Length: 331
Image (cartoon, rainbow, N blue to C red; front, side, top):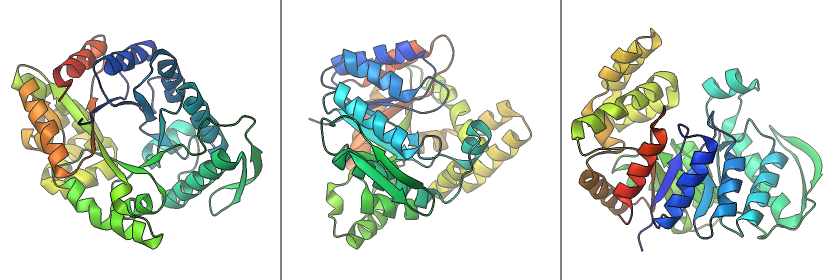
């Protein structure tokens, strides 16, 4: 059976996110992913969902390796895996300097080294019950886990946008979490994924390829596209690495124009500069029929697990997620 997932990155209240994940299980979704940000603590939300579900896998997409310590992440992962009886996937990433430093007050430095050392520490702590590390970015004398995890390893997926991190995924992770993928992305990353895997004698075919896919669905195609513009404008204007990503998808001039308007505070103009072509190339947008066809196209392109990621804010956020879940169920 083809796999499909839902991701929640804010909008609904924490208790509503739990209800959305329960509904996703009822509709047959393979997994539900909770983002880190301003919408409630992702581990607490996932734990609440784990206690109310039986089959759906639950993951973080993503948890930053900078804003929590490795022991804290490891304890949360092992706890969630216990509560869910082995249904948890730990999604990690380096996040962004423009978020980590001003919002969390910690220094953002050497993201790949930090990611490697975090994964190493977490894996050893969960498998053996005790771990320490003296690395380039992390030094921990020793930490003991005072309970036996339900599994001796929790699957770890890493966010990856560019070749060096994709190679790192090939070396140390069970899966990759892409974002704003095009129908060429899965094919384009395979060389870097294989290069990393070859360094440690791994088979890259065993590494899951997933992607967060911005999603906007309506019976009115124009409304679906218009609802999606502010989200992409924000990503292009605020996050330099996402601007680079979309530029490398073939939209360099458009991405630069959006960022130009964003930087002077003209957010409405930034949204107007987001073209239909950019939206269609990097996500799932249109009618329910359009959405189901695009999901199939992403699978055919090599994305093992398409993860629907609606952008919804305000009082109707929950309604938006319910509509997307129903429109794509079974696709």
